[in-house]
Amino acid sequence: MSCMACCPTRLLPDHARRTAIVSHPRRVAFVLLSLAYPPLMYLAMGRFEPRWLSLLLFAVALLRALGTRERLWIWSAAGTGLLAVVALLGNEALPLKLYPALVNAVLLVFFLVSLRHPPTVAERFARLQDPQLPPFAIAYTRRVTQVWCGFFVVNGALALATALWASDATWALYNGLLAYLLMGLLHAAEWTVRRRVKAAHGHV
Image (cartoon, rainbow, N blue to C red; front, side, top):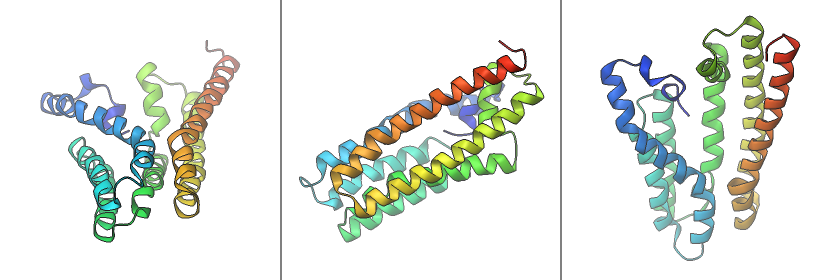
């Protein structure tokens, strides 16, 4: 998720549009690899040493760095690369398991920054469907962004706890499945509340 991804490509200047198109496959590869990271890591643990598994995390960092020019996501790529370096040099699995917690921390910062400097993340997505948002919708999207901040705090804490104290299987189960289910439930709940809010203000 990035600010550029929240903006319609047609609003970008020509050179930025070309950059966005070129980086699109890298972004898709990054998202797919990030989603598959916990189960892939779990399947490889015990079969390969952590120093070799760090190559997978290096690949994630490289795809993230090549797919963006935004400072926050470049720092995210650097943090991911640092975890990979620590795993490589120390031949330890813990840095590899900390990646989901790092992702939640970066997303938390991204959403918090948008609260400080609007439009919020939720408002940007809402404006893709309705560029002329009424005041009640702007206030609602701000609240949605705050709710997601709370989610990233809780989810990040659980990701960190499973990395530090849980078994590899529990870590993979939570970060590779349960966390996504919780995210889907939050999306569904927000969609239901959004419909009620729109109906209350006479919007269908």
